[in-house]
Image (cartoon, rainbow, N blue to C red; front, side):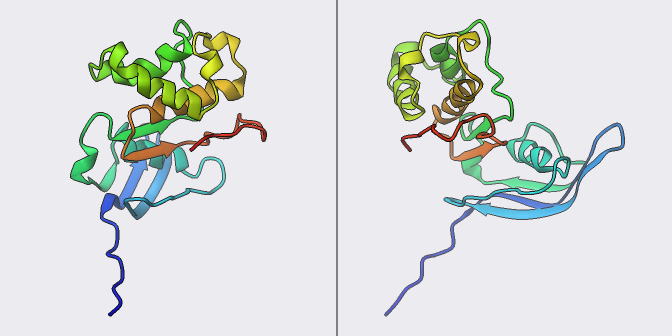
Length: 176
């Protein structure tokens, strides 16, 4: 007897979602998608077609103008969704370690307790030697890797990435 694996439970569903901004710009019209656990989904299209808007809606950073977004119960915790923006959005006054520690600090996790997770993601993105550097001392690609590490440090259930590799050169290697 052969069995087929059950379909992955949906993490998030967008049902006929529209997004129109206050200035009248229609960014999304009628977007419907179901994203399951362990899925790898890419939004591809020309500049201005709504890819970033869709990611922000999924992350809960903005609300749809119409339609419905249903998040699985496992996505209700603060650390359940990680987001890597197009720009690194690092705090210029904070070291690489402090920038990565930020989401854990917001969750109330003490620095001593967070250190192993921070060390792990620093190694993963190849920036262990730069843990005490400030953003002004990093290349654009290195800043982006710090942003990726910050999104990974909470071990999110859902990781959203908005053009995360645009600033990375072809020699960048990740230990995923």
